[in-house]
Length: 455
Image 1 (cartoon, rainbow, N blue to C red):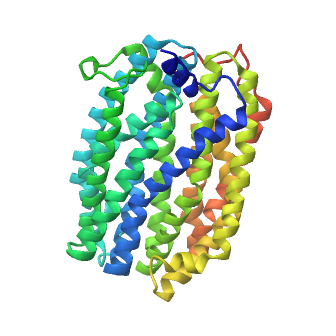
Image 2: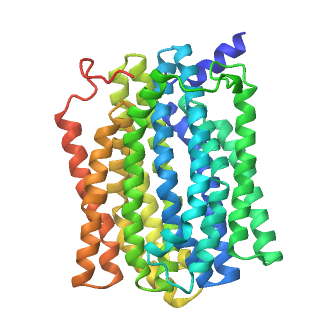
Image 3: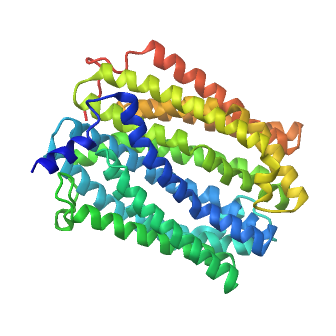
């Protein structure tokens, strides 16, 4: 019994040293997300070096579309995580259980929809993006095959989100390590040894996602903790569903719209040819790794803020926000410096074509010095989500990263049709979002007891 109580306290973030708790929570997330990035990065490295630039461009062209669909559901999952964290911090276990089983039922519905929709409409969507005909067949094959495994991806992220919402970031790490190793081995076998083409890289990813889902689901179903999952209890509790949607839909819409804006940006990159697509695609993989520390601190910050507000400790939540912002921005800029110094070598890992490297280095060195702006924005947005203010987070990102970014790229490339023009879309819109969130953070009493959002 004592062991159970001690383990339970280890997942609560309402007491103890703030910095230590954020780091202890974020570090396993960092390692886990490093392995998760290996999914797509292994595809790109192996496909680019074995099958060539056109195959790498095919994988890169479909990544924005994949993120478009996944982003919306991940936003819903984040909203559910806030609800679960708030109730868990308040020790309201019946509501924790209702939120968990409602989320599971919703995941089955959304995952099935994503599988059918993504597989059926992939050719139409890729053509709308202006994907060059030279890489279109391979892009369709990769995109369609990837989405056939989307149900496993959705359900795994639900399980991982539940564990993270209650402060457990270690077990998702273990499962990601196992599945990532499986993914790399299968990539080498399917693409390198058997020569089955681009689609087989997506098959390897789907199989590894199924493994991670099963491991995580087993953990939740056999746990003796308050967040145990019982498949017989799956269903929609309407109050829990409303709370999840009110917090999750704004985050999902923001993710979806921002991903759509990135699809528009990708369409403009596509206009410069396969080499530009491959170079910028290689950078996006590197950027994914670079932002992992930021992403992990933000996930820790959302859980920390939500649990502490649930426990009615807003002062502690504010201290955690300040620490999270400083850590996120500082780490982002340190990583940016390393990427800038070694940019040609990093791009060259994906493709040795000199033109691909030139495009990638130019794109990378335009964007990376401003990583701290994106990190600052994400940190405050994460804190807002934890406080139940997801709609404000959505509004700021949609205005700055979509309403401004899309017209800028569309119009600016008409006057200066070079890839650098597209690259500058990111730093410019990051700066605007920093101004928006700073004004809101300083001027609005968004964590005062009278204005706290009730879940």
